[in-house]
Image 1 (cartoon, one colour):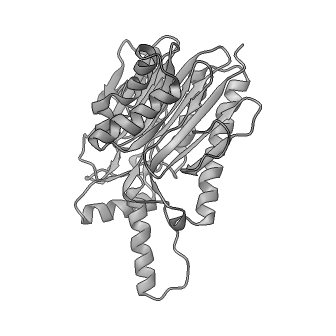
Image 2: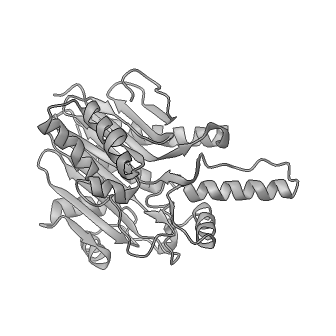
Image 3: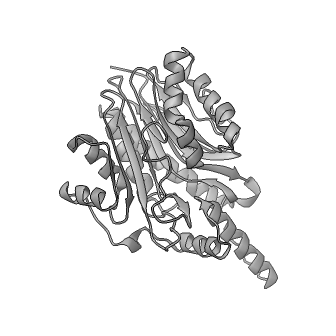
Length: 344
């Protein structure tokens, strides 16, 4: 059995400013990340597979309205929600993905059903929902995914006639509310989103190495605020937003989706390890810090290799992230600083 079993998660990257985040909001984000990591950690401790661990972690992130996936997903230009997800098994290289679904409560479970019960890899729209229904997955009314905060940011984005990446709109909404409060001489504090406009990239994801030595990765998103209906980013594209191979590593990305697609970012980490014979940290650093910036790609990724090494690089000011090894307290972080030995 592998004693290096570990799970890592992310909840989006961007310009995260301490000054714009309240202490209570920061506590809430850390608590949410800690709870998800603890759940994934328990799956691994009980001998569960890496695939089980990342499925559970991303499912919980989808159910948490703090993040842009599942409940709490952003709105399209039409005021609707279109959800994407992907998952990959490093043991077999099997993968499953869905995109543009509107009623599946947990897109990551639909993606896993594609992996396990279909000869195909990617389903879209009505076909994806029909497949999910045939697998007995839970459906919800479209209104389930919306939150008041996401609706406010959509209205602001629509007013400015632009699309905004993940929590960008939430930051803009907070700034707008703060300005309005100041103009009205209100003394009550206004809640702040820690990521500023146009600089928040939203996805959730998980990677894991289980006690049997196998890897898996999963990624899920609601897309970008005020996006055109039918727009699909990197999340459901195997090799762009999600990749896993026992021979190298498991990767989940978050960032400017079109740039991650053009760079095939997740696969590039694994490819550099295989063909350049470099370490996980060196390969991930090169992709995030060198290659993506050449085309203005912003964001980050989480990755774990077959030895249990973990890296979580990002080229923005911050990224919601964390990891948990068996028998150890989960580590979570938001800002750029390292918080523990081996936490990159």
